[in-house]
Image (cartoon, helix red, strand yellow):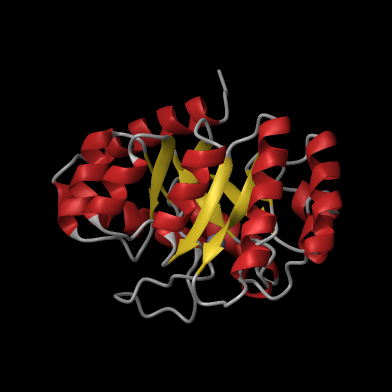
Length: 250
Ligand SMILES: [Zn+2]
């Protein structure tokens, strides 16, 4: 059995953090061995090197970013993100991007460009968060960062958006709220895909949980396997290959 990797979660969220031992142990018990957690504000940056987290240092990896929508994310955190990159505490920049639910386009564009610049300087992959703004994001990448590497987290857009981004060195990360079946099939065929919980967010509507748990990744990949009629192990093996390529792990 291949190891499952959760490509995107929020261990700094109180719902997970207060039960970290239980969350990690029950995820380990169903075969999930690695977690990429996002730090999006000062209190979460501080967690990266905390005693609580160091207990699990073999299985937890971190990214850091100023999120376009999360109210705790601040522009002044950019310096701290640079510092985390310098200290090699993070393996990527994110989640960052554009979010159409907020009407602060100018700020979002400026923060995004600055962080894409940081990612390029440190040669780190980018984890994108995009709500309703895929074409605007594409324009920014095409004009400024055509060689960007990383993945679009929580991808659930149209076939046309998928095709637009499939020409870039970007993966598509699926969670409990994936796009239409035909788009999922196109992504799996394309090959550059990942799986994530986004826990504690993005609770699978089919499960009767109070919030999304880390262990639900197994259920998520199982659903994709059923929908695409692709063997679970084939999916996991490919994700592992994509993970190693993205983070240049040999
Ligand atoms: Zn997230």
